Length: 285
Image 1: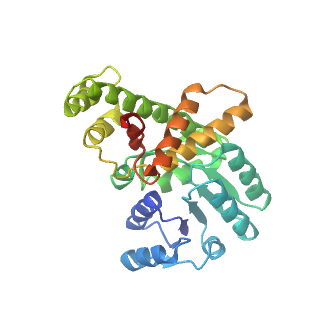
Image 2: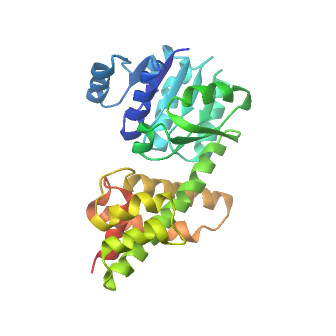
Image 3: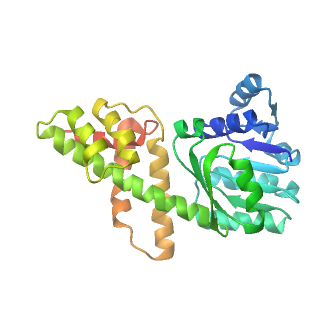
């Protein structure tokens, strides 16, 4: 089974490294050619000239791309050569779009899985990702075995789109949670508490402590916004939630408010920084 991967961003690069080290990666493609050349030189993996070549030379095509448009463009390009092949899209995009694309791939003679990830770049390196898979159940064991080389947990969530809906459940919660944590942290600091003590309390002793507060509270205290998950990506995911909520006719007041806060953080120049930079919205006087 030949495996190709398109998208060598923060997460895609690390996933590709894990697959390559396991002997499960045959070629890569990246829109910015220099990134693919750097990966190829370092890890001796063949570069595809374009995504169609990647699809032609692969049995499984893994995508880790930025947004709806990027995935839609790639699927459009590979449809003529996707017969008999499997597309595993690890990007976080709109579930409704993903289901449409999966139907197109099926009609062209292939199959597609949505397989978004829960975890940070550090967790990729530690192979502690959780992958949430949606698609044909009969092919799931093969997908699980492949992705187990970069994740500790690979869960089957149901038909196409269900992996992405599960990811949105996660990101709705952490998006609103981190915005609330930033608000609480700011309250503590502005009241006169030592920022390090507030961070320690949130990380270790609060009744609302969590793996996220354990990782992020200390970074808030030092205002260390080095990127594990960019603000622009959190904003993008909350926008997807907003669109899907409208389509499903459900209310999402907490994530809608959090979305505005992340948009404010972006407008102040924190788009590429970690999403805990939403703290700056509260710290501004």
